[in-house]
Length: 297
Image 1: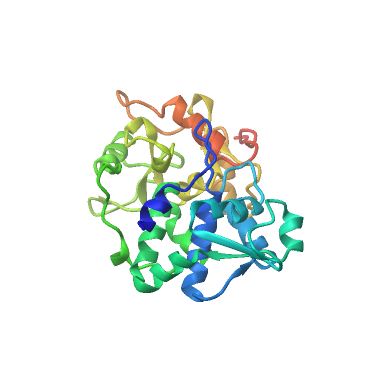
Image 2: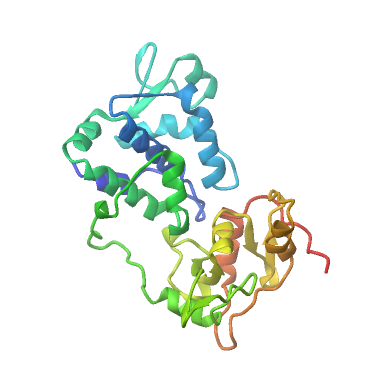
């Protein structure tokens, strides 16, 4: 059985490019717990709060109950659920899962495969990360689910799978003249830019192209905040700042809340700005909450 293929083909709700990372998040969490205790099971009542936090932090703005993936991941053949009455999930109702003493864990065949080939865990995890989340979030997401991965465990690219365009970073940084489109940061060490990154507006994992009109040159801080939905780009290429962001320090005001309503810096003349379709996708699928009013200057 090809477990990597099964992981890349998880059945997920789809519609108009909407993100649905609920099953991938649960599976990453389960892989982390397997790494910690290969024989343990995840009782729903014990992990419900963890899964809620993961969905709130890394899922789309429209929240979904952790009961949904806990029940539905069974259909993908990588997960099993038992209750106090025996095998099988009682459904997607939170109260039912709690009352029935539902507990889940990786399917027996998958647990056996992971024991035979420990590197499989890393390859599965990296496939899930690459398919559903931008690279800027991989490290902290692994930390959040308790996964410890080695770079050597990366799986080779499968035939026919989309490959990233290695020129993307250079093209985007050049288009924005090596400065952060949000704050203007343009640090260098010698001739080399430092702390500047090419951010996908529509995530590569969700068919975002490696193209300048889907990219922004951002400093490391603003790239992370952009991918976490704190920042966005609205009409007129003006910066959106989520009302959910709270920062009382002068640094938070200077580097985040004061950006509200500012126009992006760049790109340079003759270079296409961020396409409206990509901006709209990010606003719907990543940006959290309502934008703050434009900062008063």
